[in-house]
Figure 1: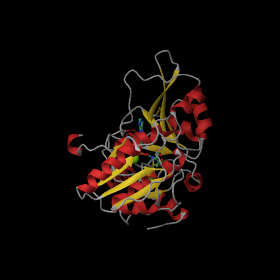
Figure 2: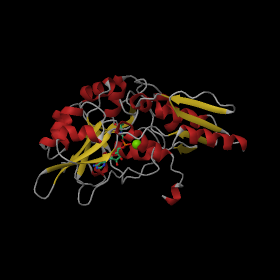
Figure 3: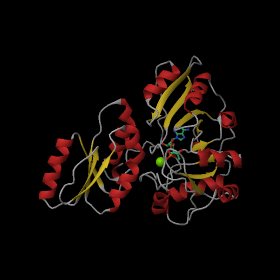
Figure 4: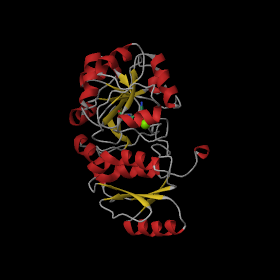
Amino acid sequence: MHIQLDEAIQRLQRGELVAIPTETVYGLAADARNAKALQKVFATKQRPNTNPLIVHIASQTSVLDWADDFPLLAQKLADAFWPGPFTLVLKAKPAVLPIVTANQPTVALRVPSHPTALALLKQSGMGLAAPSANRYTQLSPTRSEHVVSGLGVSIPVVDGGPCQVGLESTIVEVYRDNQNQAQWQLLREGMVTRDEVQVVTQQPEVSKQQATLAPGQHHLHYSPKTALLLCASREELLAKVVDLVKESRKIAILSVGEQASVEGCEVLSLPEDPVGYAQQMYDALHRLDKVGVEFILAEAPPQTVAWSAIHDRLGRAAHTESLENA
Ligand code: TXA
Ligand code: MG
């Protein structure tokens, strides 16, 4: 069910859930100060409540409503990357609900750049907890129709068109070490790269002694239902295709750049640049998941920093271990 901005605000204020567009992926939003609304988020996603939520805020000026401490290092990162596909994990204020933080001492904050998300945040004055609007471990939605196919028609969606970034935000924790010095650590890769964070901070990444890794870094995150095989090169991919076609297996190909059609295969070609690829990657996987093949053969992109987040997600999508063994 598609709804407009005004109705979305009213529903959120009543403690209901609304799927909203962001520049990364669609989020399943709820009032981050309303525990009952937040419980619905976990129930709808079938997500364990040990996995904390990102609070979306309208601007940097709201950071101290949620965080106890906003070190200069974190301010520099916020200046550089907000609004945008970047999440800061900071020490939480005691008033932040434990269902948001999963009882951790930190809170994750993001100012999104999607105009609809920003308008919603500004007009409602709320902080919105919004995980990706998909069932736990499944593919993230980058179009409103992915939300509907993943969560069903009962979730109201504000349609903001296809997401421009297409991959979940980069997550960086800023914490104080034993000498009270602010340090940073990357918790989840995204289209803001580790190198870009390094340039802004002008100091090296330092892992926490006992690193609080983003608990949602489940190795089965972001998986299509169809088995995905990652092939190191185009040659390896085409050799596998020949083998599988000989066995009369139904397969699809996801290539980096043009790939001529192959008899008996569904072929989807993604752009050769990382920004274009990331924009279309989840949509391509959603589409290939629907064509009813046994395997998706994906060609691995180049091994450069700009492709790092894409490698991370493809690696997770390709994981074949069953959930029971996870
Ligand atoms: O781009 C995004 O970040 C999207 C859009 C909707 O904003 N949201 C998103 O949310 O990807 P979600 O819930 O699917 O992933 C958020 C990740 C999870 O891995 C979670 O464990 C981690 O952020 N996280 C949240 N709060 C944290 C905290 N206090 N400390 C460490 N990790 C945290
Ligand atoms: Mg997610």
